Image (cartoon, rainbow, N blue to C red; front, side, top):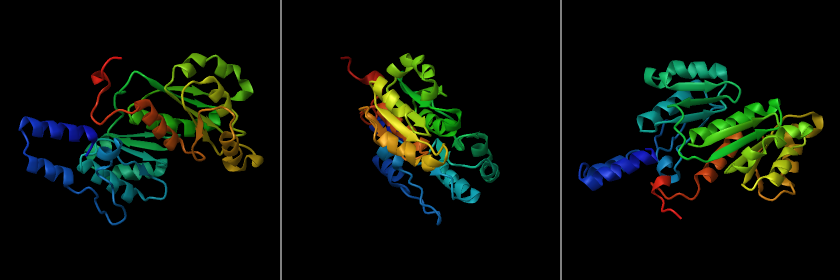
Length: 268
């Protein structure tokens, strides 16, 4: 069950269209579905505001399709799948119902699949996703797509690394107006400190495994970002674009109470 579905159900109870008993049945019905190989959490969207996401790597096409079908049949309108290889994607689509297969989208570089389509942005604010080089693009796109699926506007600043810092400085307005910035960089990871020194919002740094031998598969960038002298920079795991996009979307959303819309807030 999605949070918006719960809101509709409670309003229906309040108006008398749905009985309390019927509502309790729907709320308590199968909070976890046991598929044998997985136990999808059907109430995570109600608890956390974001429904469960499928990590595709290591799962078979049959398992992924089974989880998608279970989620959709229990009212999860949108299902995000990360680290889904293109070959496996084709097999997943063949196993889905026609409706779910027709609703399936795929982005090859970040290996991201989505059933149910992106929502309209919930706010006027925006997240900026900046990446140092074209080689960092797949991780940056994973972050950007995740944030968009969670309802945020996303501006993309790609190939703005410190080797040509004028490329970044020409886009300072987008940095200064963002509610949160995701900074994706490999090699020595210096871009996070530069952006952290320019921005007034939280910066989430994503080290990538891009670089020559002494980058140690992203460890050099990770350590550089962890040791950033710029305040307000936090760091996620190597190549974890999903985690950065998710966190950025939560920051962009702000401390909004359950069911409260931006338009309903009292003006200051």
